Each structure stands twice: as C-alpha cells, then as structure tokens.
Length: 344
Ligand code: GTP
Ligand code: MG
Image (cartoon, rainbow, N blue to C red; front, side):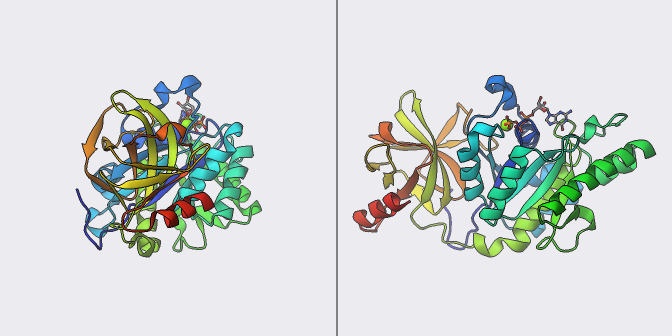
C-alpha cells in the first residue's frame, strides 16, 4: 500500500556472526521456513533480506509483547555470511543496519568473524544485542519449544543451569575484553550503555520470543526518531544481487533503505563500467516473510517504501554491480543524482 506522510520507516536489523553459529537458522525460525536447506553446503554466500511484519513479530513474541505499544511497521532482517571470505558482504550488511544481532554459539564463544563483526559494528556505531545461540546443545538440556528463555531456564536441572551460566559469563567476559559492558537482558535497565545478552536456540525456538521483544523494544525506544523520515521521498538503496529473471531479463535485488520507488521512476544504478540511467519496468515484491534471495513468487506492485527488499526489473541492468547504490531521480536534476551515485 502507498505510504502516508508521517509513516515510520521499517528498522533494518543485520544478523552478523561467525560461520555456522546459526544466523540463517535463527531467521528460519522467525520466518517459519527453511532457507538453510536450500543453501549450497549450508553456507550462506550472499546477503539476504526478509521483511517481518509487526503482527508476525508479536505472534512469535507471544505474551512478552503488547503490539499496541508499537507503531513501527515491523523489522527488515538482513542475513549475512559468516565464512571468512565474505568480509565485504558483512561490512555492507553492517553499514545498512539500524540495529544488529550478533549471533554467538554459546559453546564456541568468540571466533575470528565474531571479532570482525564487532569491529564492523563499532566502526558503524550500530547498536546491537547478542544472541547466545544453541543453548539446546548443553548436555542434559530439556527443550521447551518456542518458550520464553526464563521459563525454560527455570525448568532445567541445577547442573544444566550452572553450565549455561558459565558459558554466558564467559561470553559477557569476552564482550568486556572488547570494551562492551553487557549482561543478561532481563537484568538490564539501560540498553543504551549496555549490551543485552539473550540466550536462544534456533533449533527449539527457545528465547526467540525474547530476542524479538528486545529488538522491537530497542527500535521503538531508541530509534523511533531515526525512523520518522520522509518515506515518500525519492528512494535510495543498495544492490544485493544482479539476476536473470524469466520474462523480465536482468533484474536487481535491492534493499531500499530510504524513501519510495514507483513503477515509472527513472533510477540511477552504479555499473561495472558506466553509471546506468534507466526506467523501472516492474517492481516485484517478495511475499511477506520470504527471503528475497531464494524466493520464486513475487507480487507486481506500483510503489514500495523503505525499508524493504525489492526486485527491480528495468532495461540496461546487465552491467549493474552488487553493492552499488541505487537512486530514484523523481523531480531532482538527473546530473545531481548521477554525481551522487558516482561519489559513493
Ligand atoms: P553461515 O551463513 O555459513 O555463516 O552460517 P550460519 O550462521 O547461518 O549458520 P546456520 O544457520 O547455517 O547453522 C549452522 C548449523 O548449526 C546448522 O547445521 C544448523 O542446523 C545448526 N544450528 C543452528 N542453530 C542451532 C541451534 O540453536 N541448536 C542446534 N542444535 N543446532 C543449531
Ligand atoms: Mg547463514
């Protein structure tokens, strides 16, 4: 639907962390889908994007959330690869984010790409929470599917609880070594100077309600002003992938992080050789909760507003480049917009 002035932009949440620590699995849990099964060798090799509307966020969060207390439209999750060779993709994901989840395998602790992710978040000054994942792998763990974490924690044996505590305190120590004060999220009053640690399992869904509640709360409390942008202005985005699409020719998958894009807009896109100026032929919106990277079904729409993933079909896109900027021209002088794209 077309946006009204005063609408709030959807916050962008980047998911970062070491390879195999469970980033895609966590998003799969939120989506209720299994993107990871479709991945070659189960290693993420691209940036992905999934829009999760507020009603789904509150459904997953269950009793922890009161949807009435939120006016943000939902969350746009960006999945990034943890494999060491994808530093550029992680930086790109981090740079797009309003807020981030640092996923750490609770048994494995800090690893090289955890450290790298922390540096990216520091450099981009992106607030983040830590998802201490795979709590279900603690020996003797009794799973309580999709339960809030305190509920399942209290239902474990003393020995299991103790082992989890030890792993969590080690993690809090590692965060401290990197200059971050942190604690288990339910002990925190102030999330502005402290990092909230949320024990979760992407396998059993335990703690996932807490993770979504904390993210929504943080976005609502500390980021609302940043979200009060003119979502009706000319769109700005970043190319994730350049893809051949049957019936459309070459298309670009884009994360639109500001403004709107419309069906007949002129857009400027960064190219391998020359800057591309072209006209939007079709705007293809992934289904709600779909990962744009693997989705096959798209809805043809006239207009979309930030933040969202969108596939744009237009002539002359063969030369478009992943990572390049995309700008909608609208009523601005074309040369100004070309200069802006070339300066990036
Ligand atoms: P990259 O994208 O390659 O960086 O990996 P990733 O962080 O997305 O990890 P992924 O979600 O692909 O998970 C890696 C493996 O860990 C898979 O076999 C998952 O099934 C498993 N896994 C993820 N989360 C959990 C969890 O909470 N518990 C258990 N037991 N296994 C998990
Ligand atoms: Mg992954």
